[in-house]
Image 1 (tube, rainbow, N blue to C red):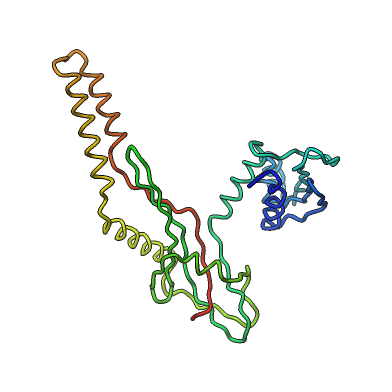
Image 2 (cartoon, rainbow, N blue to C red; image 1 turned 30 degrees about the vertical axis):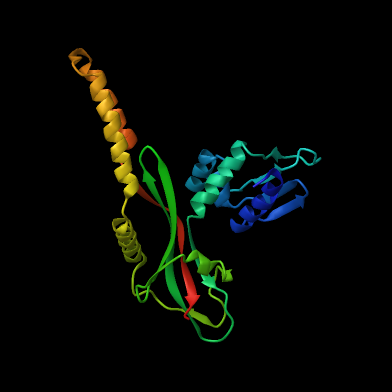
Length: 256
């Protein structure tokens, strides 16, 4: 993303968070925040606490943002490195971690089947690091698991509500249980790998440990320093695998 892409991102962000755009020009956007976005962006906890305590509705603020310094409009200048942009990135990441979408299809009495999809990051860590991204989904009716599911999703058109003349099939597998099955599937993938990277890391660890032991050989008064450096080597070389979910969602697709 470049500086000239920021306004496009902001417009998409506020559209997705249901904040009406009041003014828009090249390098400027002014929006009316919703109550939820005011709470997340404008740092007014005492105001909203008071409003909710007395039972009032409250008045969310408007936000005027400048993406080009050359514009004559008034507002807060947004650029890479600005706290406001990083704040919006954080809100987008937090609110966009899970979605529920329905395939936009035409026809009558079309059944939409539930799929639980997750993008998973597997990090193989030692003194070196390698990441692997998996896009997995489980059909919450049959339990079928599909890899590279994003390739399926990106070819579809989506809507946030059930399309006309369509109906959804209730999951036979609860999403929490589907997630557990995906976790077990990922663990089986990892268990099936050779992990030569881990063996190589342990070999480098043993070489450095032998050098450390040789350096401190016969020097009892520096035992504490030796143990500290030995622990530092362990933290550096010990192989670890971390699994984290980046985002995901519940997607209803036409059965095919």
